[in-house]
Amino acid sequence: MTQPNIIAKASAKPISGNPVCVVGCAMPLTVVFTIHSQSGPINLPYAVRVNGQILSEFKEKPKKLAVTNQGSITIPAQSGDTVALHLGSDASADWRQEQLYAVQVNDKYVKVHIREKKGLHKDEAKLASPKSSATHDEYEAVLTGDIWMRFSHRYSPDEVLPRLPAGTSAEVARAVQSIYQGLRTGLLTVQRTGPQGQAQQVSLHFPTDKSDNCYSNISGFDMLNNGLTRVHPGGYAALINAALDNGVGSVKMSSCWRPMVGSIVHRVGLGLDVNYLDAVRFNREELKTGKTPAGKQDADDNVSEDEKQFYKAWRAAKQELEVADKEEKRLSKVGTDEKKKAAVDRLKNASTAEVDAKDAWNTERNKHEPPKVKAFRKSLYTCPCVSQLFDPWYMDGNTRDAVPATPNAQLDGNEQLHAHHLHITVLDKKVLP
Image (tube, rainbow, N blue to C red; front, side, top):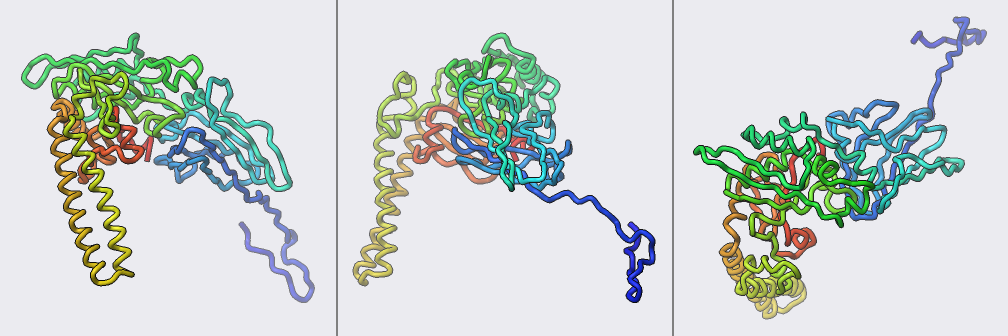
């Protein structure tokens, strides 16, 4: 750029013969994408592309959009820009093949509402004609199961080996690759030679339930080709290795990739659920209900009658501790010296009783936990690609830190959800940061 023109004060005549420089200037605007959920909270990974280029803040990995009933992505833009999203596992820097909900900015602010739509539909990830006002253009779009599947990455056989945990044998690697080549049945038998030269074998039974939300929300869905292949290969390897290491001959899975329902880790292909190890059913619902769940009589051995009583006693002791603590705090401000001392004594006794009751429950629970479950879980802990483990006995939201797992007391929603299966989350921060 040349130096600015100088205007002579006396004559007001410019030194240069061309004093005016016209510069094109696009109006600064914003595009706001709002995702409306019908299926609960979603920590949805996303990346943004403007005029065909990924924005710099998304170069290495996506961001997570916290959606409860709705969540918004705001992107600065200029008139003339085209803005599009990458969602779910496709937002990973490894892929980004599906540009979704692209919108061209004119001379107004832009609002895009993306509404989750359950059921079988043929809608595309496109925008309807806008409703315009003097200040903004407002668009409507839908998010269906078909669209979820479109932007959920389908792994190829060539992508398997780099994503397997270190030490995975060639036999296991080939078996995992076969999943992505397309299985003909929901059963995969894996064999390998053990460290002492002995033959080891496990059969994986994949979920085939036709009532699963995949079949309810995706047109022409096939679990073997469309579901299993959207799960991170490290998850299958972790299950297979843990089974072979501990003499487990059969692993039955109840869920893998799925859209629109449940945790984001399942929706982006980083979650696997197991409900059987050989004849051991992952189920302890009767701990809280006191009754064997309908159709799950084989869960009886997981909760003894003594454990039910110890658990009930601990819950009562826990409640007394909460009441005593609240009362001690209240009386410490307004009570007489006598009442303050009585409240302190009550709190101390309640705390001791709660610890003793919990220890009794823990001891009884651990005594009846099937050895195969303990060994299987221990092996999963050693797998570097496993980041979470939730099951009817223990809960661990971060298996890679030093904080120990906590007993599944079936008190909060996540504990109750995992009272009837084991869940693993695969660690891949490119997919889910």
